[in-house]
Image (cartoon, rainbow, N blue to C red):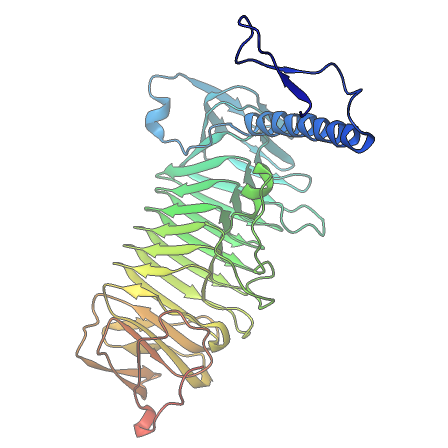
Length: 425
C-alpha cells in the first residue's frame, strides 16, 4: 500500500485519507516533498509579484483628442523661471515666456495644454516633461518656441518628453531646438495639425507608434529624423524585444520587428537627417500626404529604414541619400522606384513630373508618386542631363547596386546611357 490508505467503512467510503505527517516517508521522499512545497510557495509569490507589477503598469495611455476635454474649464498659467508645475488633470492655457524655466506635468490624469505664443527655454531640464504615464494633448496657438539645451552627454533628453501618449494639434506653430531628441512619447505620438519646425535635435520624433494625419513638419536631426521604436515602451512595461538597430540604423546584426509602427496619411513632412531619415523598428504605412527626406551622406544609414514592411497606398514620397542601406517599398498601389547610381550628385533632379532639389549629396533616389504610370518609360535627369532611362513595368522598381532590399524581388532594369546596370545585391 502507498502512503495513502483507503477508508473502507461506510461513512468514509470513497474518501482518500493521508497517513499522519511524514514519519513513514524515507529521507529522500521527505526532501522531495519539502522541495516541492518550496517551489509551490515560490511560484505563488512570483505570480503575485507579476500581478502587482502589471497592475502598476495598467495606466491608460490611449491618445486623447479635443473631444476628451469638452465642457472642461480652462486654467491659466503664466510662465516663470524655474519649475512650472501641473499636478492635476484638465485644460491649461499657457502664456508668457521664460529664459530658464520648464513645464512639468506630474499627474496620471489627462491633460490638455494650450501653448499660446509661449516661449520656454532651459539649460537645466526638458522644456515640457510629463513625469507619469498619462495622455497629453498639446495645442499650438500663435508662434511658440521650445528650447532645451541641457549641457550633458545624454543626448536622449527631448525638448518635449511624455511618459505616456501625446497628441499635437492646433493652428499655430512651434519652433523646437534640443541638444537631445525633439519630441518623444513612450507609447503613441499623434500629430493632427499645426506647424512644427525642429531646427536642431539628436532625433526629431520618437515613439512606439507614430501617426501623422496632418500638419507641416520639418525636422533637422544629427541621427534619425523619425524613429518608431518600442524600446522605451518595453522598458516601461518590463518586457524586452531583441533588436540590433540601436545605433542610427547601422548594421550590427539581424534587425527585428519590435511591433512599432509609423503611419502617415496626411500632412507634409520634410526630414534632413545624418542618420536614418525614417527609421521604424516595425512597419511603415503611407496612404497620403507628402514625405521628403534628405538622408545620410554615409552608407551606414538609409533615407528609409524599416525592420518590418513599407506599404504605400497613396501620397508622395521622395527620399534621397546613399545607396548602401537604401530601401524601397515592400508593397505599393502606385509606382515606387528606387534608383541607385554609380556616381554621387548634389543637383536638382527630374523624373517624369517629379522635380526635387536635395540639400546634400546623394547617389540613391526613391520616388513613389501617383503621377508615375506602369507601362511608361521615364528619364532621370540631373542638372538637365539624362542619367538613366527607366521603364516601369510594375509598381515596385529597383535599379542599381548597393541597396539593402525592400521589394527587391520585383523589377530590376533600365539603362544608363544604353549600358546595363549591374545586378543588385
